[in-house]
Every structure is written in structure tokens, then in C-alpha cells.
Image 1: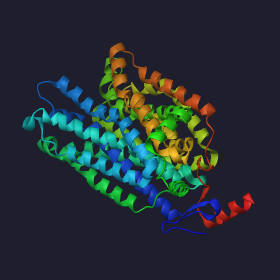
Image 2: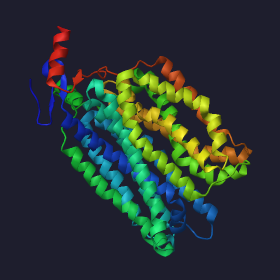
Image 3: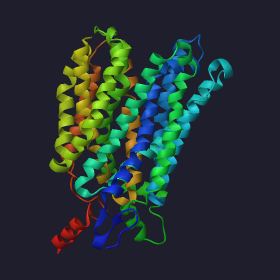
Image 4: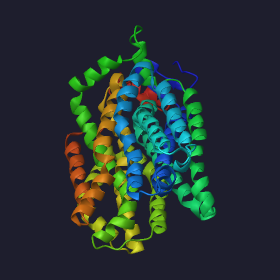
Length: 469
């Protein structure tokens, strides 16, 4: 048996990845997700402060539109990032591209904290804000799908659900950290300092996080699956970009649609919880006859749900390795359909315990997807186009449907005065998830398409080789 310094071997067509290597791979992938969602949480929770600093003080409506534009622009450029970085990752390797994306994200967030206020540089303040968000969105287009690919290709087949779930732990940790820091800053500093310099501190934190991410990623060798792909052709580095994109849309459009269906069934509840619910609970709900709760209470309830999810997600990931991904995905999809209206009913009540219950149920259904999709989606594509297939389909569907959740919900709730549009929206995409699941083959315990079987120990490898005869 041959084995690299990183603990990855391929005896007789079986890949062995030891636990130490697997932990480093998970940490290297998850830290980028922490950086991305830390920025998302900080930006969402400091929206009012950003309005006050970067936009004309005499036009509040324009300021609100500007903040939303800064949020939306990152989603608009994500598909472009996916189109660029995805095929590139299939051509030059996962670790190289992921090192680029994580430092780009960190630099974009870091520089946002240095932008002078509107009072100092005028129109250049919102322009620079949007440019930083463009950098963040473009790099994010290659980050998340690449991190999914990276962990999936390193993971043993029987533990892919468990290790993949830690990627979403990074999502929830990042958002919860960002929300927590943004919530605490006004409580521990003077109003003047909070509105001038203290709010910038969370954005500065992104750069050290990015540096740690690069350090962890460059220390790892390329994934075993990609190394095998390269060894099969000495004349190329993976799939050429143009050929890879053409192959995806011609031969793998069913896989892209399946990936997109799971992505929206997963991410519409995600953005409903993290992006729209604060606005709904604190503002929109009063327009539709409900009772609002104060912003601090709403924020702390959400933060509590996020931190609980961090600890539950790996348990569900481990469970999916035993019972399969589909039972847990079915729970999330059907539960969303059945409980959508009851969730909104309690969320509009104004009762803090009931609101907390509604958010907890929404979070529980969300993590059924969060714990299993990072190990399910990579199994839809073969190694040669996995990074590109995931990046393109993931970002197109997130940008078109999930990222617009807050905008659409605000418009229809305020425009019609009906409180239950969020429930209708959740049901629609829950049904999309059900349709995909009826045709999905459960990937739990199976090798990834185009990859060797992967195990954790040499003993497992020997047993597998012996069983194959």
C-alpha cells in the first residue's frame, strides 16, 4: 500500500484517508464558510449603521435601497463567480482555487471596514461599498460549492454525511458570530463610538480568518479523487473550462436541475430564517395585524437557534450515514410543507415563547437539509466536472430564488397585507424538494461517481478488496 504524507492512500483502487487528514480537510473547508457567513451576519445586523455611514442622511428611502443593493449585488455576481471558479477548480485543482476564493472574500470584507463615510467622500462611499460586495459575491460563487466538493472527495464513503455536515456548522458559526458581535457592539460601547469605529471591527476580523483559511488549505494535498483524475491524463490538468461547461449543459442538465431543486428547497428556508424573519418579526408583522417584538429580543432568539443548530447538525450528519440521506431530507421537505402555516401563525403572535418556538421549528426543518445536502449534492456529478457542476447550478438557483426571498416577501406581505405569504413560499419550495426526492438515488455509503471507494483505515481497505474478490 502506498500512502502520502497527508494520510491518503489508494491500495488496489481503494482510497484511504486517515482521521487526522480528514479533520484538517474539514477545518480547511469550513473556515471559508465561517468567513463568508460572518460577513453576511455582520452586514445584515449592521444594516442601519451602514445606512447612516455610506448614504445621504437626508434621504432615508434611498439609503435603505442602497443597503439592499449592496446586499443584492453579491447575489447577482455569484453565478459569474461560479462560472469562473467552478470549471477552473476542475482544471487546476480544488485546493488552489479554494485558496484564492477564501482570501478574496476576506480582503473584500476587510476593505469594507476601511471605507470612509459619506460625509467625507460623498458618492464614492456607496460606490466603494458596492465594489467590496462585488468582490465578496464573486469569490463566494466559487467558495461554497468548492468546499462541498473538497470535503466530499476527502471523506470516507461511510462517513461522508458526518464530515460534510461540518461545512454547514461553519455556516451557522459564521452567521451566529457575526450576529452576536454586531448585537453586542452597541451594548458595550458608547453610541458615538459604536456609530463611527466600533461597527468596523467585525469587518476587520475577516482578514485573519481568511489568512487562517489559506494556511490550512495550502498545507493539504489535492483531493484523492482529483489526483486520480489527473493521473489518468498526463496531457491536461483536469477538464478544460469551455469543454466542461458545454458538457454540463448538454449531458448533465438533469443533474443540474436536481441540484437546483435541492438547493432552493434548502436555501429558501435558510434565507427566510436568517434574512427575512428579523424584518418580519420587528416590522412587517404589524402591517398584517400581528404583534411585533423588539429588535433585541428577535436577534437573541435567532442567535440562540443558530447556536443550537451548530451542535445538532453533526448529529444529523452522522445519522444520515446510518439511515441514509433521504429520510432526513424527506423530514425537512414534508415538515416544511405541513408546518409552514402553523409556524407563521405563532411567529405573528408577539408572544416571545411562541416566537421562539416558531423560529426553533423553522431552524429544525432547515438543518435537515443543512446536515445532508453537503454530502448529497456532490454525488450528483462525476469527478471531472463536479466542482463546475456544483458551482454553476448552486449559484444560479441560490441567486434567482433563495437570495431574493427577503425582497419578495417584503413586497408581497406589505403589498397585500396578508401575513401568510412566507408560509406559501415555504410550501412551494418544499414541494420542489419533494419532487426531486422522489427521483433521487440515496448516495449514503456509496462512492462518488467517477471516484474510487473511500475508507478510513487500511483494515477497511483490505476487507473491501477481499470482498470484491
